[in-house]
Image (cartoon, rainbow, N blue to C red; front, side, top):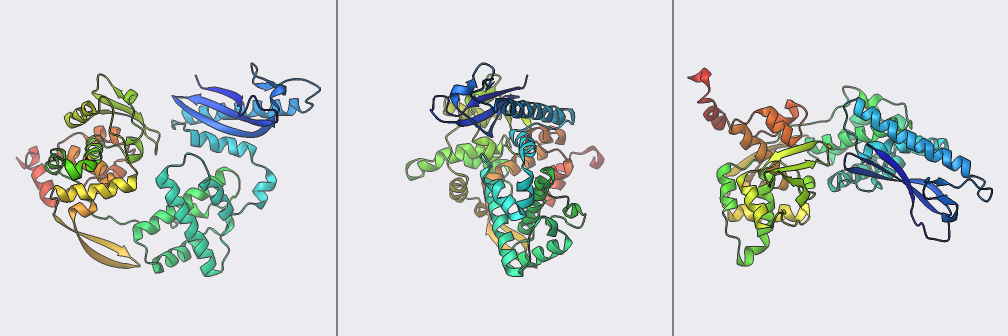
Length: 408
């Protein structure tokens, strides 16, 4: 059962110290600073409340605050479960923030100040933090360039069109611009949840994320076999762990952020499955292990190989792809600065950690694994979002259909 407890940050200090709320649920834990302080001598450790003593006259109001926090976090947890939504520490933290928000802060804060506070949140995904920071900078630059205010009440269609024009002149791709708009909508959603604004113009159907289908690559099973069987010794020894981790990702479909969280306890049923709750969506996934993955786990004595940064791994993966002679020429059409450009690349130049997830979905699809079964592993909730991961050529599609009863 979910459990809320309160502990002191420094229980043995000689001065007032912060009170933390811990809420444990579904093998997860929320650590939340209440913002309240108390001298340890006035704290009842067993009851997890302030002692009822005249020496600490504000004990009653403090205990009411702690009671309210307990109620809020439990009610929010129940509401999420009843709505068939997966509770996460972030969602619960948002609810507690709302319950503690001061009216004067709500009146004084601005959209940009609010974003700067969001960016300071602990435990933000590295990629999310990078994208939020970049969006924040672009909003500041847009404000400076246009000499217009960027605040909660100005986020409307005029802002939308102006911001897109500004980013287009900055030579951003259509998908990059869509990413900035997506983050603006996320920021506004969070502001509305905290009662900082009642402006819902950003939910207008025309306030949409720009998107174009970019021909992103996947690696075939033959290409993956070549990478798996490479002898990486001598000066290439440094690539060995990266290769192994990439192969694991290609046969599990895990994102890099989830891959680095896999521990020995996540490998279950005598080493035949990985069970993990994904970081991005908090979906619980159970993945049957391919023989290559089993061999790699055995190689590292029941674990996955240690990891480096996503950026460094992407750099090494291109080197591995070049060594594996994945040299097919790929033409990619990208809308940049409002104009369509056609760029030519060697396939190995385009390999990243995310290529693994796309390769898993596409290869499983080509091998006739049911779409719903693949989605259970990748964590996709809609077939529309899942199908964006499938990268097969016209020829591959025709070959796949050769054995279909309709064509026989």
